[in-house]
Length: 379
Image (cartoon, rainbow, N blue to C red; front, side, top):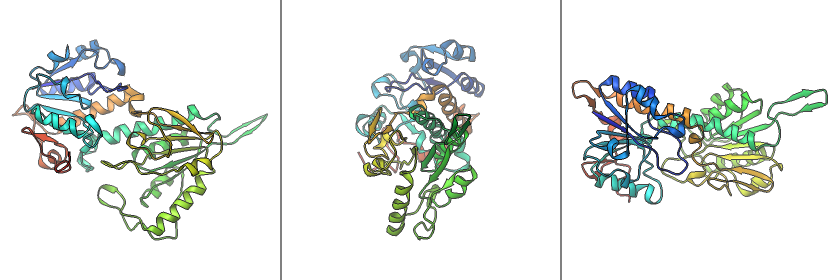
């Protein structure tokens, strides 16, 4: 069983799909591991560290040659997979709903190559798969880094400071969307001394917000969220609730120094949370960080890959935020992949064998066809 680890080719991608730690663990399972030369350099991992862990280092052709499993952070371009053998597994974040040649079109090419493409971001949100969930591990770091990026752009201090020359007021930070990234953003902003508040469409998150010492911003006396949907997502809000929530959030945003938005919907454009009028209501020098900018953005006027200014407010739209913490992001991503493959490792077969629940959820292609139910009928 040969496992291949490729260098990432996407612009700005600094992460790597395996670390010396996971290389050792794969070898202990009985696999051989090949790493493309330089794959870990941008994540501060030199080739010699992989070699010390027991991996072989080679060019792409040697790394891919006769590989049974290919590991990546993002799905590699099909032309980087020349010579791959039919039936090999490709385990990575494959972005099947993405636009253009990096989305569904790329999945179709994987099928033509005979790959069994496994989209790690499709991992079901079930208890036994938590340690395999790349979205959670990477979102955790995104929430942390969003606060640091906000602090870097904000022209004032975060904590309250009492000095002989007078008192500096604490920054007011508002987090919109309380998933994994939002919860980490709340915790990080609190550690930096900000006065933190947060909101979400799911009423169950109120307790989580308050448990971290932040103020929950919710409409109290209007019916609208009847319960949680599958996987912890909210059911549809009533029109009355939507209007009341929008009014409450608008009045709250106008008083904030920092706003961090984290709302993403898999397979759909990010929901619009902040309008241009709401930006205009904020104080000059305020900062908004949009973690959904690559899926269309939560903030009107946000630009992917740029920090722009509107009405005196900076809007931060960095791409691929986890990659800005490449070493730690790689370590967590690599453990997700190891946890996934090792959980299904069949000692007699000498390879992982997937069950239906997880296999059917993440498998995009098999036997030259697109087989995932979420992709059938789309192109």
